Amino acid sequence: MSTDSGGASELQRALTQSIREHWGLFLIEGIVLVILGLLAIIIPPIATIAVTIFLGWLFLISGIVGLVTTFWARHAPGFWWSLLSAVLAIAAGIVLLGWPIPGAVSLTLLLIAFFIIEGVLSILYAFEHKKELSGRWGWMLISGIIDLILAAIIWGGLPGTAAWALGLLVGINMLFGGSAMIAMALHARSADATTTTVPKAL
Image (cartoon, rainbow, N blue to C red; front, side, top):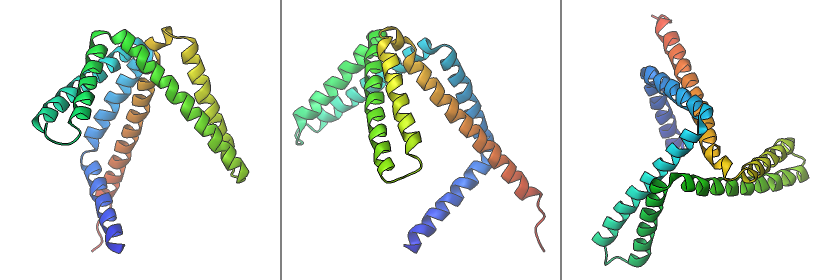
């Protein structure tokens, strides 16, 4: 047990040291993410199409790779299931790349389903915490209600909301992720500056 904790602390130290040494790269990456996130929020339809096309390429490439490996190991168990999975991935990739707007609508429907499931589970979780007299149940309840409201707004505005919903959420995610990276880089820079300016004891 002590060996595991020692290994974890060693890994943490190595990670911290790496961030301190390369804080500039993290800062640049964070700034780029913030800029891209702001652009996605300002022009969400372009970001939605970009996400749809990106997913289309992911499906297509993974399907082709899956098809090659399936035929390469065609004597392995589950050949037909693997073949079907690869063909479906290729088909999904072709549909998303060939018709990105309908593909965005399909992805938006999945997003709505996610918000509904997440909202219901958060509300049930909140009521479970209320029974245990936990002080955080109110925030969980609000989070679940907001998820359901978002699902209703996106659903009510279909197919128009498909043009901006994905792009907006991706933009928000990139904005917060980039801000976190910038904060981490600046913290690492200030910590590095502090350690270099403090004179060593004789």
